[in-house]
Length: 408
Image (cartoon, rainbow, N blue to C red):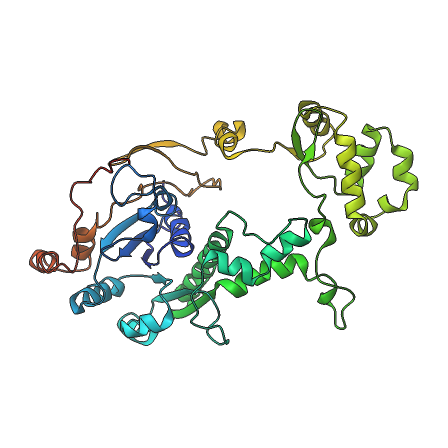
């Protein structure tokens, strides 16, 4: 079955997580993604554990549906080969900093001259027209810059700390894929390529302030920033008789039903704190604590059954181990075990979308470093002799037999 982006060719000059996750989304949707790597390969190739050299587990979860080519872009022949590949590409995605791209001679003007229809997307830490332009950016830095560790203190943590998840990288990667598709749609209507810059800091500031602008939304301010309901220290999994359970009692119907279930219907009708979403938000700490006390009267299984039967949102509190074994994910085969040609059996994270006509798919498993170098160069128009010369000069590498990693 044909994929939605079949025929689209994207050159991926990004590394680590943000850019590779964006291009994996596009690859899942059918694009031909060419991953250009230095001789050392993407940094995530080296994060263990791994079975064979350069195939670390982090790499395996952001680089399926791609082909890998090794190019030394500091060598004139390597740069020339990349430009040849870009002549037939629809888009270039990179998280190389702007000045470094300019030093390599890969500025937008140069690229547009060889392919006016090319979309060039630069993923950067901070917007190019502000005082932070050009600064390096990683997940932890953007979490700090957008106040997340401070928010956790407001919500009850003893000290600031980072969320143990690269959600900035993945969120900005997802946003980048959307912007790139919009630019391609515009190009297809007008014939015009363009350059797009996606900054992590500004993108994630949208997320944080979208949730926490609060009274500072208004000029003059009607109150401090912050959303009280989500910042209360009582907003956490509820302790039951025998464990923990996750539930949110949010709208009027939820509250009315819950109070009936615990025999407190009269309190719901008479206590002004329960009256509206505004009053419940104002007294969020008290009401979360109230629910917390009531939850201790039954077991986790009893609460899950009772709340589900009464249409009140509830979910298990998973660990990483139990998440991998979740019955819903298992039923959907969302974490399929696949046979990789060099890594043997590996788990992949599924594609979280169901299409009726042109569904996304896993067509290629994550590639070895330089697995497709010669193939891609031939497609770009280089002769067999030219490809051989690049390999012999060390400008590119064609992957050989994988080397097993001996556990320490």
